[in-house]
Image (cartoon, rainbow, N blue to C red; front, side, top):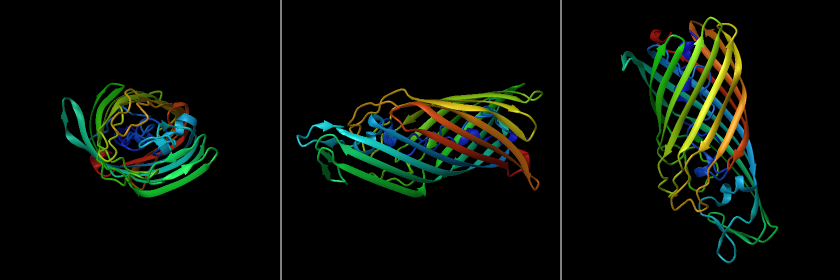
Amino acid sequence: MRRSLTLLSLVVAGFAATPDRAAAAAEDAAGFYLLGSKGPMAGFVPPPGIYLADVRYYYAGSAEGDAAVGVALRRTGARTATGSLTVEANIEVDAKAYYDIPTALWVAPHKVLGGHLGFSVAIPVGWKDVDVDLSARATLTLPPPLNLTLQRGGQFHIDDHWLAFGDPVAGAFIGWHEGSWHWNLGVLVNVPAGAWQKDKLSNIGFNRWAADLTGAITWLDPKIGLDISAAAGFTFNVENPDTDYKTGTEFHVEFAIVQNFSKSFGLGLSGYHYQQVTGDSGAGAVLGPFKGRVTALGPTVNYNFMLGQIPVNTNVKWLKEFNASNRLEGDAALLTMTMPLSAGGQ
């Protein structure tokens, strides 16, 4: 039963991993793939049926120095009195984000290429809050909509928040099983229909098409309850037509090692690594092809229970980020819940 309720990790990856405009890599310092969304049983596709999944995601992080430049200067740049492009300012960022990501999933009754084929759709609702403190080291002119000139030593504070719907994400996946081994391939497509404004710091949507291709594998020994899972993939981004900014290709790898002590409880370690493998480009990338990087580790807990006659699978993760470059560095917490809506999924 527990294995049949792990489909969520296949399809909830398509959402911002960090609050927007908070660092100097990827447009708004955010990719639509949700880092940490894959973990225990990442390679397992459950039996045919209809499933309902939900992710509650919270992130809090900060950046300063070069890693925070993108908040005020990334797209259009700031200029000194002589008009030359500069980042002569000390910038500090504190940001928080919360997403609720309901997802509908369907695993087809017939096999394709020997595997189980499935589809998904998700529409996130998100809240973000971004605080920026800027102190000029030289005469500094901030671009529209601020239209503000700061003398050396001058300070400026921005606090921006937003609660809105994010971009819908459609997905397809196929998975196979062989003994204790389970593996799958999946694709997610970000549809730029969510809340986005050019001058917002706390955008919920991305205003760009993007696709992610990820493969995952799980080794599970039901006799001893040990689950070893890993997933790796690439995110490909289309240029944002309103900013002429094209985010580079992003690589991500995730893992989990969990010891299940019973059918209802398991405890283990999970983590991820993110690396931007090509630089940003386009006329809007005025500060050059910066590349982001971050790694995270933390505990993960499985807990399964019955809601009346419906089995519910839950997983909780806490992930501490470190070794960040050109990105926020902080803490992420994820609560995922999955349940079957049809008899074929139990």
